[in-house]
Length: 405
Image 1 (cartoon, rainbow, N blue to C red):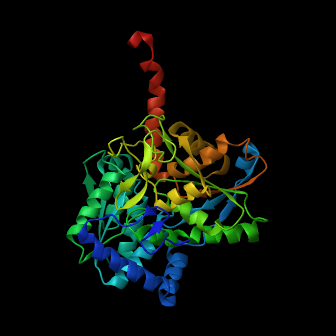
Image 2 (image 1 turned 90 degrees about the vertical axis):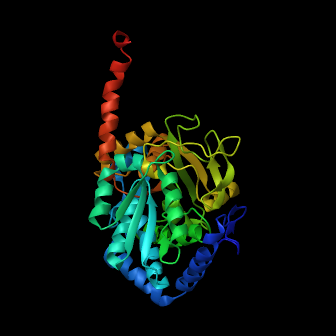
Image 3 (image 1 turned 180 degrees about the vertical axis):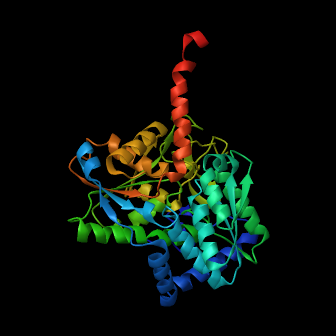
């Protein structure tokens, strides 16, 4: 499925940006459409994906987790990509496009730090100047990835406005791009933003589903019954789903249920309090907002899901009933994080843990099914967050102790 000529998936998508960005977006759209059809570009991208990223990533049968849950769980191992997450697929594709357009400087946003690390890695590979914007809240909880970006030669600029998270980092990256459009490309990290970003980023991640579909058929005895992936902006999920859209396969996207269903306590754009259609960062889609249209604050234990909007193609797939969207809470994601580590020897990113958490919670309803979960990244970056959560959990009984009241 491709968007229409105005970049819309049904009523979603489009190009809602200041006039100064219209021409750079048209330039990018033209450059991408030419590159997409160019065998030489595709061959170079495939070579780097193979030799640098380490594709294809395997599909792993999670035998002990499957026994525990009563369904057959398979994991698409994007955590084994170079840099530790699926983000490198898109960063590499856009990086090659930047070089093709003759630009020398890249700006990017990052939440959990994985897109920032992937962008910094690609810029080091291709000799491009790199500036990454990151909310100061995310910099504190993802300090190892900040150090990795510095090591790779990127400048990391902390963003202290708003909630100091992903939304605010995108705001600053777009301001930078608007000021430096002649030399600079904005390497957006998800299926968000103005056209052509949602379709371009999806296309660069479609390799996930293409590989997974072939691997399930050739190595694991047939098609899955169900696909499950976490959904922040939605890049890893749409990368998996896209190759299966014409198949009789169920699909579930799992949003961040956070601490509660109250506004400000979650990042569930389809399910939570405050969900409505609006415009954010250049695209029309579902987002969390109040009655006056102000964007609501969000929360997730996973920095990569802590964003108030979702990619426009996801909104369209949801309206069509092709993909079901649910949410997993912080507590459920943390439980899934520990369970996968202890049953399979795989430490997942907290983002991916939301997808595993949904399968755990719905184990009875998926009993006997073949469930393919996209493990979008590894959890090394989250060990500090886990330590903080353990400290808080140990402290809670004392805070409830009447003797301390």
